Amino acid sequence: MALIKCKECGKEVSNKATKCPNCGAPIVKKGIGCGGLLLIIILSLITIGMISSLSTQQPATKMSPSTRIAPQPTDQLELLSSKGYEEYGYMIVEGQVKNITSYNLKNVEAVAAWYDDKENFITSDSTLAEYNPIVPGQASPFKVMSTHNPVMKKYTISFKYLMGGTINCKDSRK
Image (cartoon, rainbow, N blue to C red):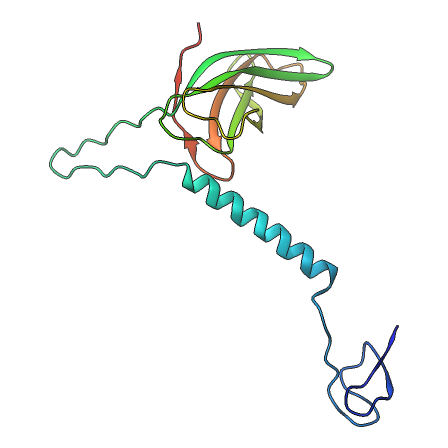
């Protein structure tokens, strides 16, 4: 407990008091404290991440009422290579993805999903592509690591925006 001075009468009062026991004046507390400051920083970072991922997405196309056929999504990335392997107790998927748009793609995440030999889902993990942003025509490496499970046999790779939607990707692996 700390003692502070009452702004009205000048007597010392506990910093936990809501009013001065001498004169009855309310005790005004200053600041938001460490917890409040940390909360503001975290919320600011989340907001910035959401805004930047939304600003890199193309606007949605509308379905034409006369055709009643949904438009095909436009690919934004091209998967150039990927390989999955086990190393030091981890299953790793690494490869390269290329930006095939005319604008920067920010906060691109590679998502590796692992399956058993009967194609039952086991787990998935994600990581940001190495380059951020990925500029038009640029290829960026990625490396996703998951804890090893002996039944992991097959994987799929997909891409999404950090805290956002999926990114359409053309698969050009050989």
